[in-house]
Image (cartoon, rainbow over all chains, first blue to last red):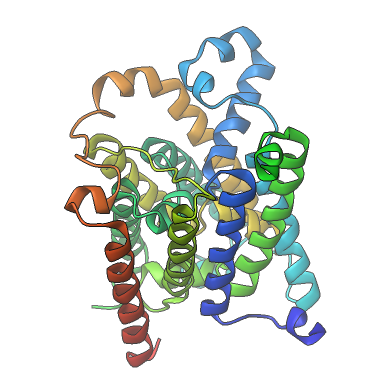
Length: 174
Length: 185
């Protein structure tokens, strides 16, 4: 049992099945799907509020997604903690700035990787809220509800991702 | 019913959110999908771990959610999509996915595993969400409602009973997962 928790990786099928069961509990106990990107919109809203409370309140988007600490924000904090627990138990926790695959192609330059990550993140945050969800909200929680929008979104996530990853690293599968 | 009280209890929900996140993060990390190389490998179609995790989650999740819905224990949370919102937003997301190499959930998991570039990515995601909020009134008037999809769910779209679609999608997913193992992924 203990050995199981200290293993570096589990079968992707076991992990996927576990996430599926976790989504049952989210629907049953919290009446909500499991999605990560809403928390980022709420965080942006909290920053807007900190700068100008009146302005944030007047923005229609933050009337739809009120910037408060709730289930969504705690979910993201939990993900950081849960992943740390997993990495710590298996001894795979390792501080890095430039992932090895990136370093091999572009060199081990923290400033460059940081700039790329920031730009990628901005596009991702914009796209996630534009599409109304991310890889978890649309890609898993939405598709399993057989939502038309979520299946279209998931296909577009991967279509865009495969295209741009190919432009960055070359289309190795061809 | 007891679970109605639980759902309306804000403090309990905050704890449940934290607990759900811890389990989710633990699973993502154990699945290896908090690793930049694994995600980029998926987008380069050399590593199918991300798809294997996602499709297994959809298979198990779908069967359970539709069974619980039938019993009246849960309700669906689907939203209407459109070409202007879902397709354009999805493609922008995809570009960000490839450039960042994490998604909003796995970025948080990567931070927990020690990847500091993911923390910068998370700041970027919040900035991007903030930019969207600023643009929202204009986008809502112009593109977001273009080409609204005719139905919210696949069963409604094709006019087939949900149970039959669930069986069909389950077989499709099982077939794809089997095919991936045959191909050696």
